[in-house]
Length: 272
Image (cartoon, rainbow, N blue to C red):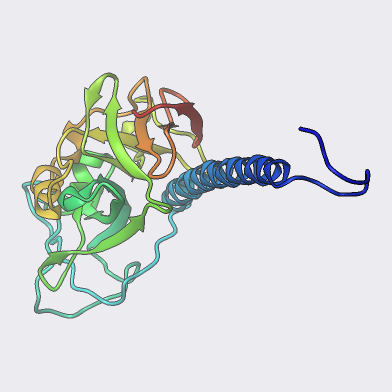
């Protein structure tokens, strides 16, 4: 297009419009690129937070550390039959560690409780100190016969909220779907049966029930029966999480046959 007048006449309206259009397109593209990168970083950070919380739980069980909810009643009197502890509403309350009949045994991680895919619950496992009548110290997980801690007639729940809209999509162990898993103290009588080596040995136990259900489903299956579920799966516990803001998923593997307390995480494109 030929300009009229001197060479200092400036730009035509069409040239200005073209410049503005290109600049706007570049700015929009840069904005969406930045937002996408921020969402991908959030997903990675959120998954590291989840991984860190699970590692903390495993290390707490391995070292015998327990964050007490306060005083509660736990009873596991001498009995010829192996029965799990009970938590009556009435009785003399004790802090954990002060009860002569009960002891901290581990934690259970419940996946998608009540159908909430952005949540995992952890429950406290309480086992017997002694078994038989007269009593002897427990030597196996079956002797301990642990149960989910109850306070006020309900399972004591500690939520793990998944950040940044992350949701759990699937969970399995050795190819079979699971709804929860336990990290439990490893007793002397269970030596040689695998487990995760840490400060002290713990067992990683896959539980095929509870996904999307409430806590009572887990307690009904586990109380007194934890020793019957598969221990130390060769694949480890395999959890798959979807991003809520990007087209990505993360696979988080916990433990595995003979492995130490550890996790492995991989982020990949697409959904689980």
